[in-house]
Length: 165
Image (cartoon, rainbow, N blue to C red; front, top):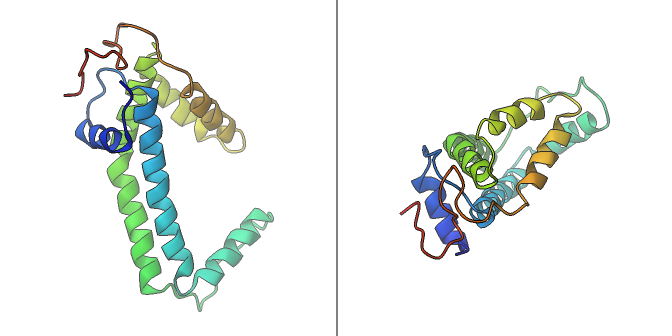
């Protein structure tokens, strides 16, 4: 049974410390969409705030290769921008552990060890080439899980299983 958006997010938070079992593709990708929507809304609020012009200037300088880009002494971020940044940080911290657990369960669905999360996170942090490992990880998560039960649990697509209650 394929999960819908709401059920995937509910299971994501309901299993925030659960590395056991398997997570089907829809469980993973609905949660990624949910997080993308939240971050997009917060970024829109940030870029509508007072001081966002300077943020964009610094980002553009960094993208142009200027490693010495910095905010001027007169930089002031408006209240909505401060709240937006604060909420982004809190949202990221709250979702850090559940994301790792979801990725472990996704690897389990693919018949792989959950330790691959650590491998991909470590390789993804490498300067320059890390993005390639992040992309490889995302591509891997596009593949369907193993059909039927595997050593990590029953098939989450099976009609008769309710592995996360």
